[in-house]
Image (cartoon, rainbow, N blue to C red; front, side):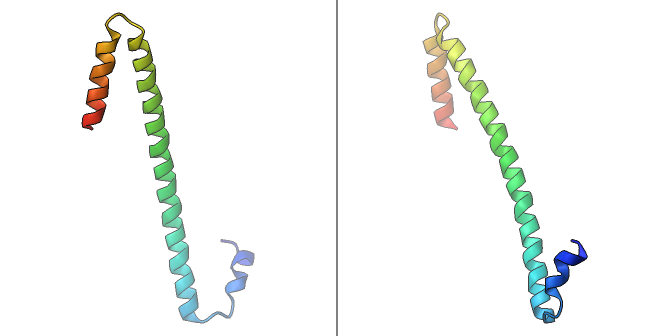
Amino acid sequence: MSWAVEEWKDGLPGKALQKIQEMEAQLDKLKKERTQKQFQLDSLEAALQKQKQKVSFHSQQPGGFVTLTRLSIFMCKC
């Protein structure tokens, strides 16, 4: 962080500075976790859309109901 942003900490007791540092580290960790979770969510949503397209395609084909039923049973087991 730049000096101007850190200026508000001038004159604070050491214990307060230590707590601020711990909280900033925790904030960085949570930001990283959030980014990872968002990536995971985006990946799962893309996989879901792909599966929906497959189901839509197979349900329109002859014998597609059997495929759809198998997919439903498979998804329920997970």
